[in-house]
Length: 157
Length: 157
Length: 84
Length: 84
Image 1 (spheres, rainbow over the protein chains, first blue to last red):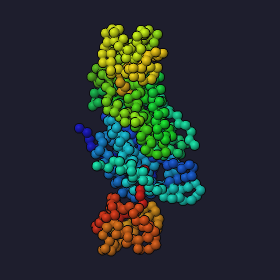
Image 2: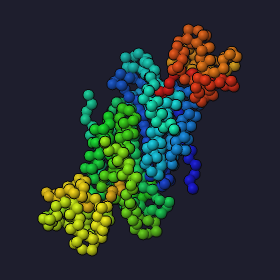
Image 3: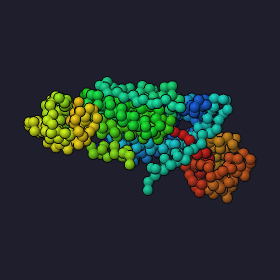
Image 4: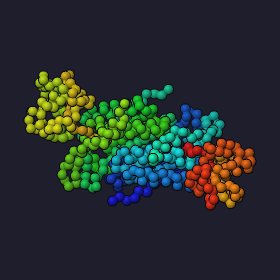
């Protein structure tokens, strides 16, 4: 009945356009009833941060995100999945990551969106370095054990 | 430290602009790290539907959605919440409802977005009537017990 | 006089969106009111043929069938909601 | 020759993003490789001072410390990921 779903995955320096990415999954698709988007933005950490610098592992970053997106497509009845992750220097307020999930029904769209973000956080080869307003080139952001725990929620018995 | 969060709630016939609604919660707010949006769209039900007609209880619809949004603000550390619900006749592919939740962190934004949609489905006084392509003015959409179950997940012990 | 408002198929079955009625004194709860309305004619009987599925609100707040109608300005009856 | 690539503070500590090395035959697993690298100088010893926190990938797939290095074209070492 339904065509196989191919995720749209991009790793790039350029910003993304939220409305255009939602339109990519909904235009001409009247079987879509629910679209969930997640946008991750650079916070200024109480005004101390001047930028985040995102390093990534070229090739592996895209492959890994694609694997996670394909796993989401296997787990939930999705009509479309998009994941865009930026790299390079990003100022506070700037976009870092976008995940869009579309489905006939809301539960699948929400679950798949959260799954994608949880896995992306712990499996996608990106690292954030902080640049501080006081000129010190800051530390590498520490991985959070909360993120590992969030990803483990989805592990199959 | 943080200003009280006031939800933006609108019940209206006009469409909404996803990007503008996200910008409403993020512009000038470098404390926002995560934005989740849910867009509910009119499906064509396999090509049989010509439109959904949404009836609502004026006044109560806004009050009820505002109550649910304020409950979300009490439960999760949100920096902003938006809920827009349209009424009137909506063609397949058209937008019905938008929920936007913003927070420093993704877990709160996802949970609050899903909570809002689950409650909105079961508590907001809206009713959908189907208009079919074959000209029959269709049935009122039946409430789903799955929606009641989804809302009950959030009930406190 | 109490304002009654109806929505969706409750409204269609009764044939009007709202009306002002004097409620008899023996009508104390929302359930009493639904039972009393069902005696007012075929269209009402049809609307309330399965009274357990009809929901109610008093002054724009959801209420249960045992809610008291005393003091209510506006009482609404409607099917389970299907928004979102 | 095997290509080794380093990211984030592993890269900074070692002082280079990548290098091609002949791995000794006794290096069979990723954990062996990390231990061997740590003997190659202060900068490597610093990068692997807490070997349990350093993650690895072989040919762009995550692997555990006991993964075999035989046949690997590209082996990566990096800190826990902080994307998203």
